Image (cartoon, rainbow, N blue to C red; front, top):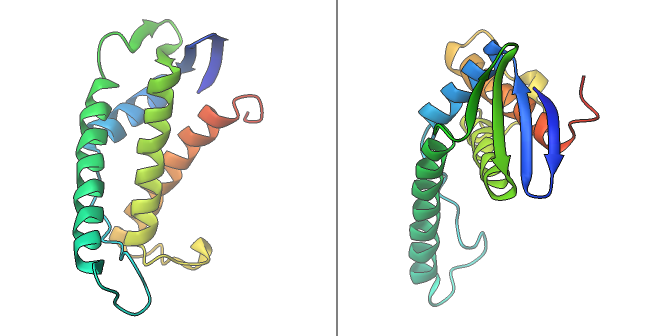
Length: 154
């Protein structure tokens, strides 16, 4: 994945055929796993916590539904063009930010599915589920890296 052009509100990336297939697959299958159920507080129960917890869960659920819809939009015709070297992905600043949110959601969701390890090197690669989660996490990280620092990545 290589940044080809950036001007004003337009970012154009060239993806080789393998990268394009992988990114499209991530977007088509998003979201992966269940949404996290964060607690409004880790401390003692305070008055109104139940209502705030419910609002938090509803808000996060709505946000995830929105991201799923937006992920489908990133697969639209206006985003992708065929190129002799692969595919050209054109993003506005807004769609680039959405893609980064989706990729981050994938990474964090996989990390949670792996048990929130402090050291990913300790994650058992022999278990198929763990290996799959680690692969998804690495793929999302690969694309995030190229979106955030295109000059620093080979």
